[in-house]
Image (cartoon, rainbow, N blue to C red):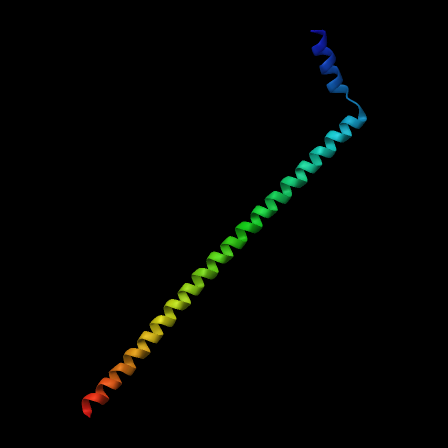
Length: 86
């Protein structure tokens, strides 16, 4: 029982250097956590930007394909009419 009392007393009182060290370690841990969170948010933003760019490119590709198909259809109709007349 006396050891528990001594341990508890030493933990509660502690030395000034020990307390400063613990505060310093907590500050470092908090800085690491903040940097990790910032990195995660940046990664998520980059992933979302990439997904949006991919979707925009696919959309543009779809419209370009449809436009090319429409132009080919019109040209084919005129060629067909021209060949049929000759």
